[in-house]
Amino acid sequence: MDAAPQHKTERINLRVKSSAKDIITLAAGFEGKTVSHFILTSALKCAEKTVQEHQMMTLNADDSKAFFEALSAPVRFNSKLTAAFEEYEKRVTTR
Image (cartoon, rainbow, N blue to C red; front, side, top):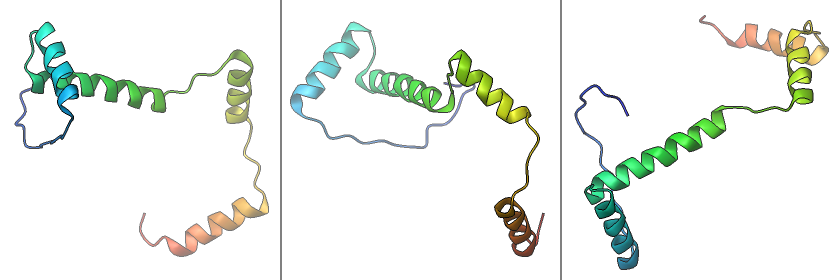
């Protein structure tokens, strides 16, 4: 989370089973947090991990080599790529 002070303007509401609330309340107490703070910090930690896993690509040595060779190879224009560029030029009026 940002260290800069921000106004809280968004809201998230949850409906949970009594047993779920009990375990969350217990866990929040163990960490000395309010239930709201515990849920927020736990959800943010999980969300940040999920975003990182989807934004980062991990490759083994062979795949990494193939990936960088593909990036460094010169672009070969085929008929479909040429047609796509021509279609772009026709459709896009502002740049």
